[in-house]
Image 1 (cartoon, one colour):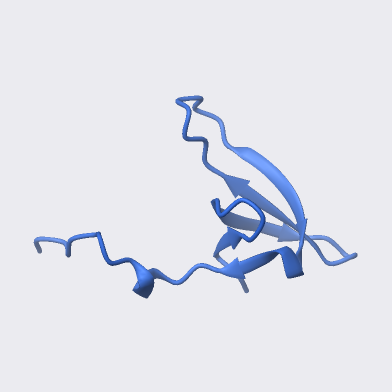
Image 2 (cartoon, rainbow, N blue to C red):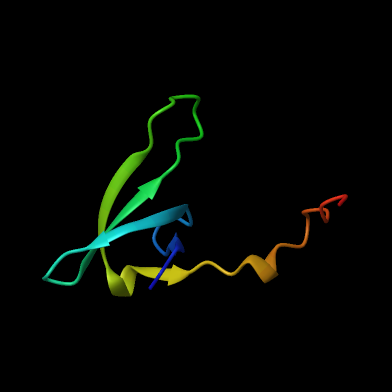
Length: 64
């Protein structure tokens, strides 16, 4: 199942929560404006793509 996803329309990275019987996904998207509570967005499966960790180029490796 999906874990981390990218919303195709906005480019935001979110976390899969659950899928409805009609095939819509509930995605939790962290806020970037300082508000401590995430947004919950309902999208169709075709409107997200799986987030790939191996595409991060600007993150340093852990020192341990």
